[in-house]
Image (cartoon, rainbow, N blue to C red):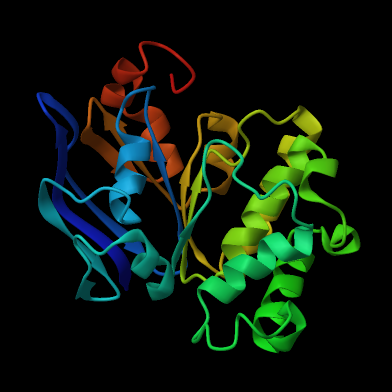
Amino acid sequence: MKILETRKITKSFGALTAVNGVSLAIEAGSLHSIIGPNGAGKTTLFNLLTGTFPPTSGSIIFDQKEITGTPANRIAHLGLARSYQRTTVFPAFSLFDNAWVAAFATGKSWNGLMWKPSGGFPEASERARQALHDVGLEGKSTQLAREISHGEQRQLELAIALAAAPRVLLLDEPAAGLSPDETRKMVALVRALKGRYTIVLIEHKMDIIMSVSDRISVMHFGSLIAEGTPGEIQKNPEVRRAYLGGVAA
């Protein structure tokens, strides 16, 4: 069953068309990767899906309901959460507080925020603790985010997304800037989450893409040029041409 779908979605910035008539269908429970050379429009597509930008034309369907043009704060409440290419955490907050903010922000009510400590919201606290556990950071929950390594900050960003209780998790280059050991740990985390969440993944490291994906969509100059299983994408001549004999070939 499709849980997330785009229908001929387009985003133009003046004379530049960053996303051009892209139609995607993401199956519930799958790990669907989006790849393409730099400037292909991948992150812009994520920005459309999460309400950062409104599309110029086309539509977005989530759980059989049209959400085109829904602002980002409402998208999070609907059940779409994302990570970013660059680490976006609160450095002066503890790891627990970073995750708690995401859990609380997507909760049912903000009533009493001015008068109660974070412990007064047990559901948000439990979601924060579980998210940190899921990424292997529960033992460092009281540390400040600025005190942990870059790799652990990337894990924390994933925990922040999980604390929002998403139905679809959009990961934008989660292994960016990581060492080989940190990359292996991140891949293991993504594997562990596969099946528990529907995951849409942008990643430039093709060994990761080919090892974790159920399906792969390939973008080039804003357009979708191919889609299929990892094996089908590896053999696709148009994909090889798009990468100019690079890693996909």
